Length: 150
Image (cartoon, rainbow, N blue to C red):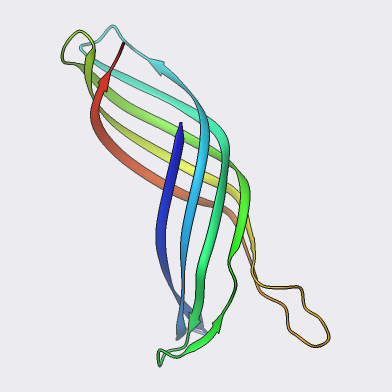
């Protein structure tokens, strides 16, 4: 399975309980997954569950920090990361015709140990960029549609 996630994030920043501004950025993730499913096909509606493992390339760009007046405090460079990706899948499937099925499905995808480094290393003449570290970033998907088997 190949996937794409595109999102715009706007995160409020706090300083001792009071608002200090916002952090905004765009995030794009491209993933390749290998999934396995277990289906219970003896029922009129087929339940199934499974999981997957793969890799993702994440890009963070247009990263900006703005103070409470709306003025830019800092704008940092773009960053990217390659990480392990895990997925859990549950769903229901109903046979409509011989080769045509209707399905409803839920997926939980986690990008593990996401590390971003923005900007350059610090030197005597110039301060360095910032870093961002997360144990995981999650993506939840609910989908439905038609499957054609051949």
